[in-house]
Length: 137
Length: 131
Image (cartoon, helix red, strand yellow):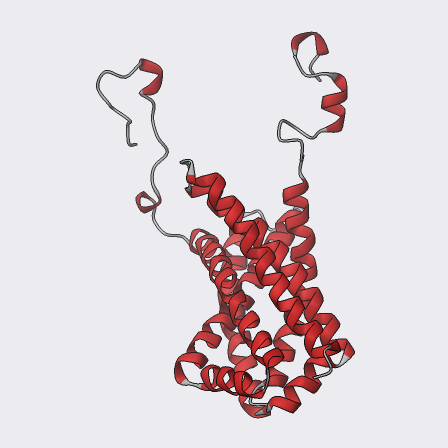
């Protein structure tokens, strides 16, 4: 345990701190918890993609063609692929929280299974969406 | 149950359950409420984006201004913007402890409102703007 051992401070200030994240051995539940927050933050920034696309469409043909060109480019597709995964992973992580909200899935085996399913299902669904996307276009 | 003789909180305060911030569990509740709404709305949003893949200008206009798509997009924008504001506020409160915290929380609200306003404006213009 790390100690806040600053000389000269009052005794009540010298107290144990909780260990930092890198102290722990990584577990599935821990990784998926971190992934939930990171995908949430990514979607926060990614909301600008929807705003850009809609504003381009509302601005006229030229702006829309530019937006379509960008989203159709390699970089654009890479960003959209990441956005798709982040959205689906965050959604499935949220469903995992709903399961906990109703009081289920708290035992070690369920926690572990749910955490792994979140990643497996988000990867599978992302793949499925993109297969459909390419089939449609 | 603690006796009121040993606390400075009034019985009314305890029964209201709003705590010192006067908002009770509303942050958590609104977070979950929008989360529930976001599940079908995000799936609809993905379906709409897949439909719009590779479409031309006129096709995209027709898609967005069709009533079902326009309504689902508007609902997704509003629910997602509120949800992401709540979520980012938690992240800020976890990691920012200096005076920048209040500024970051305010900026967070501004960003969410800006995203929602811009996207809603675009959908309404496409739908009603005579484009």
